[in-house]
Image 1 (cartoon, rainbow over the protein chains, first blue to last red):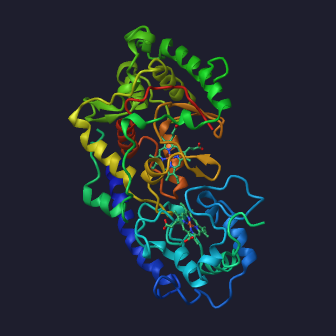
Image 2 (image 1 turned 45 degrees about the vertical axis):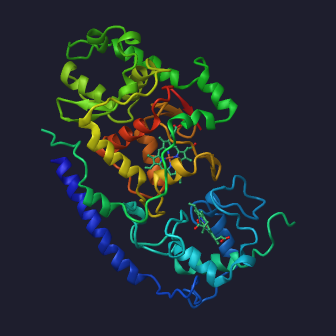
Length: 157
Length: 263
């Protein structure tokens, strides 16, 4: 009985997920991929690098430093699952950075980097997180603006 | 009458729930398997090694008392049926989860303790993560310290084990991660401040400094699921037992080390 209900809930969950994804996808700002980049910003307002830095360093919002290291001398314990963010603004244009944040699966279907602005292809999303992307469009633009300032390669003072 | 909670999710449903490209993950080869103990600093290792300072031993002592305490029903204590735990329970935890013929489903050690209470002692089941259930489970598992994990060769467990493997390999949650990405592909790397262990269930129930208390393997799995921003299962859910079954296969023949200490 309880089990039956759970199975039913799971099934509804799966169906609801498909619906939410469709509904959520409408709520996301549309964007166009050109080559390996998203040339147009997701919002009208330009991103703010200072806000972007705060998001990247925040382990419950950006989560970036769980996996990446970068030029953040004040942050202890940066992860090493991913390439360092130092100098990434010299390696990649803002448009390229935007696609890597929005949905890196477009470039590498096996990537472990989360898709920060996508609702598709996700399963069993926790209730608190359903129907919204990891970062909002404005936050993506803030992070892009910040990453674009990271022009010094690793080890440069 | 509990309807077959051991029955696996239909494959099609699983595929719906868990999507996206599977990780390239290969399970860690038996000779390279290592306990999370190896990933810890010397201070915490010493704390686990020394029974006089291992905080988990307090619960084991509580469990020893519960082992011999008669339930209010007047039915026998655990010791009344099983006798001396040091001999009767040696090796038992190393072969759990196991098939329970009475309910026709796989059960983990906590379920087994509660089944004995219900069936043989006429007592209420103990709540998940309650001090008494953790203490009894820790006491029983401690009798198997040093015994290599050896999952039962029982075909009735295959379906649940396969379900556990699918849950382990599939991407889930808002972050689109899988257990395998971290524990098969990236163990030994740093996730923020934590070194990612291979994720073996060798020490449960164990004392976790972050919890400031003892917790079960299901509590640990719950932590990893919420970290992935996936919906955790309810304590006692068949999905957890399925994961525990797969984890045991994946960990064999590492020796048990209950009560372990972890950061």
